[in-house]
Image (cartoon, rainbow, N blue to C red; front, side, top):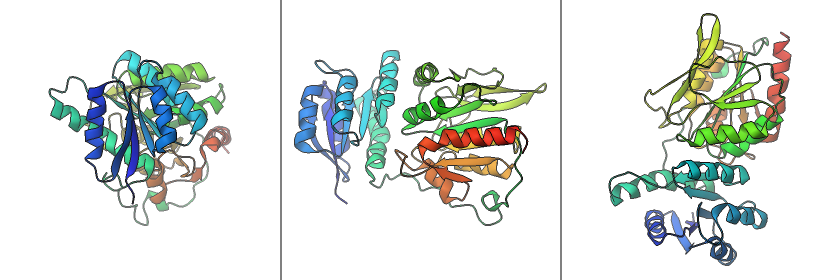
Length: 356
């Protein structure tokens, strides 16, 4: 296939050179051009017609958010990856950018020791995202082989049981997807929701705050030790796994620093396994847009326990990696567009909460 043509936008000469070197080293990526601010970037998008833009958050004259708004007005389908600092301000602005329609983000390397390590860090994070967003082979490990006949994927239809929890796993494209789903759920949802969104520390806190401001439901970053209550949504903190557990007749949350799974911490599989163990058939697992296959094994656990699994469809996903792996394994009870996820969850929660 033709190389993915990327426009690099950053006010730092050093960063532009670093990004050019990292991207150009991959034979499936071509740096079509660079720009030092948003005004120049908008002109070059028109001139060069890149396949993707890597966009700095903080720039003079026209910053990343203003540039993104203009890009979304003129080129709504052009993939954009934000390149931001891993600071509180960088996290807050990046979350805002993702909710405005940026497809993904990569944090700038800091405290990595030397230039070579910085280049490796950027390459490991940025290159697979560029390829995934543009449909190029990513070089990531393939999704695990689908479950054989007789596994949870092939279970017979079970009579409906009440639903006590909704668990959601999401990655690339997640903030926008979560905003749409959570804002469409009723504020009196009779069950709690727990979420893993692949993000580093600080970012998950700002994501929870922004979603809380947009939704009728109460949305918080989990700290560990909280009790699950109806109508509340808990998001796993960056760099910590989140699990649910039963203690003294109540279900609460716990975070821990166990090893990453599927190269992720927090990992969807970790949360979903705990949901299956704690709630059995009384759970719904929801897999939304994202790279890789985190959540596939967890969905297998939920199905094996008698729970239900919903997956976002390919057409509405930014990247159909995670939901695609679940669907390919035969683990999804239903596959629906993003704009139907909330109504599907509400319907199933309502039906099964009445014990039908």
